[in-house]
Image (cartoon, rainbow, N blue to C red; front, top):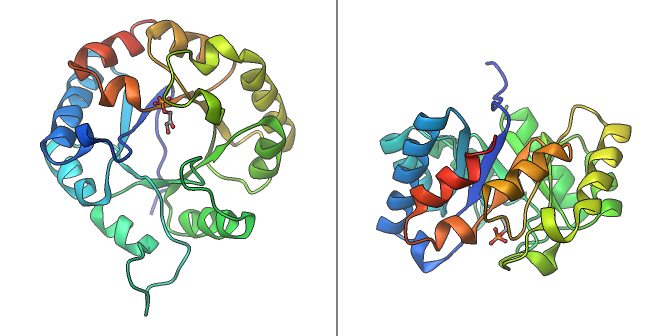
Amino acid sequence: MKPTTLKTPLVLVNLKCYTESIGNGAHRIARAAREVSDESGITIALAPLYMDIHPIIHHYDIPVFAQHVDPVEPGAHTGRMPLPAIKSAGAIGSLVNHSEYRLSVADIEKNVTALRQAQMLSCVCSNNVATTKALAALGPDYVAIEPPELIGGKMSVSEANPEIITGSVDAVRNINSSVKVLTGAGIHSGTCVKTAVELGTEGVLLASSVVKAEDPAAILRDLVSLL
Ligand SMILES: O=C(CO)COP(=O)(O)O
């Protein structure tokens, strides 16, 4: 089987657990992502709640990541989500170590290795340049640098902390140039996305500006407009 790859630049929307992401809300965002992706030719991937992975792929044919995967083998566990379950639902990869779901280094490594062995994509989240260096050494497909203090806010990482983006891009290139860098936190406009890409990233990981928008297609259109 060929390893999964995604065209860059990548816009990855994390639906988190927002009210707007539940049930029909997830379909509303997926429909918008399909529409804007078709119009623009830009890859828009989603990370929905687990139960929406399969329906979103089935109805909208969009690349889907899980928001998290548990570093456990299938077996006698209760309430966990082993990797083969997200794979069988159709996910092409998973976020790992999101700032809202931090893991130990040992568990991050376990997830990155398991995803690679399953020919799925790992997108490991990082909070600063030092952590980015350690995570890049694990060889994930993506490191997504998201300063936690900017997550969910109105000021984007591209505006507030461009140095963390360039620092992460440099650090990753020095450690493992095959790892792609995404950035996120507060991304809300085409200018934020353009700046992130000009600073050397392969795209963005974002949430609230799309998920909480009255018209998700309009904001997605703006986000990809300068690429
Ligand atoms: O945490 C994020 C994406 O995973 C970023 O969230 P916001 O786009 O809401 O700042």
